[in-house]
Length: 494
Image (tube, rainbow, N blue to C red; front, side, top):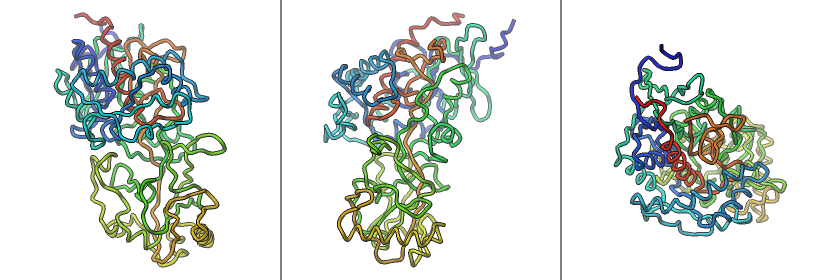
């Protein structure tokens, strides 16, 4: 008799089915394949756009050498949002092995220059444990990702592109996960997982409904990472009883330009902490006033406020207001393809003199500040007073409102310009809660049988975040999940 939860026919089968071909999926696939398991990967993106956020991030991964220091540091990063110590220790023990594992599969780990400046929160205990590494001699440009992608493709791992996982197939009695219902070009595919399913398909940074539901204070937010991360794995896990954690945490916000023609955001060079461009520039909210030091270097979206670190304010809509000197100082967007989806994948060719973007309507222009205010829909008198106050700060050499100390140039001669900015982020950290074995658990802490996860979907980071931590964690829990999944006994030995 056909069990009601089983499909009439399995289209494909493997011992280990991995949903998502990014850094976590790659680590899991390499580990499982090297242990002798038959591995199949489902990837939502078309071939050429795979890789998740690992591909378009800065290409660093975390390596630690002292487990006790690393545990202390992670606990301090989590602060008042603690993570169970069993998981903290599992993370620290495994991240300690990132370089050794990379070398074992032919990698070339190279430490970032400018250490220890790469430590995100040096004031926290244990912070000196953090070391940033990448593969090969050059940082950025997807170089670390290219090595791990090639490592997967050297192994007998079947990869199905344009084939997102849609739902998990679960035994109605034992609650074991038996496989995945996927789709390819609108047609269902039933994939049997004889040992386990691993969800490594990222967060929800491109799902506006989930952003409104889970990220406090954001009516919308747009990613500069992969547009393919829409929370699919989170919804799949919820449907089979998973608990959630860290859903309000994310690597953001920053402020960026978003236009309908392109999938992800454009980071304005004048707002980037390392760029100093001649010309006056401020950012105002919907009331026409400033609300932040526009040149402060946030720590993955967090800034100090009232004695604690918290998300940077982003009162929507926001506008970067600037003068003709800044408009003519050079391109407002740095298109060097170091990182980010737009720069790595879409590669929009921003004009050197910004005139093409002015013609496109991405940049608004007016002959006076009052006229510009009308164009962008803010009170003219307020915006004029805000500009006058900013210019007075520049004349005195000190920003008395927010302490900005970079690009203290007045908004001088017109024409005047504005770009609407949106909250932007690379990735979310929340998702199905996992244990130290990388098993996805239910609200009562019991694992959902044969279901594992790794990567940013249910990341260990609950509050503050150390740069390179997501890829480092993806590699670590990718390996943990694969080892435990391969150790499972097949549910179907036929």
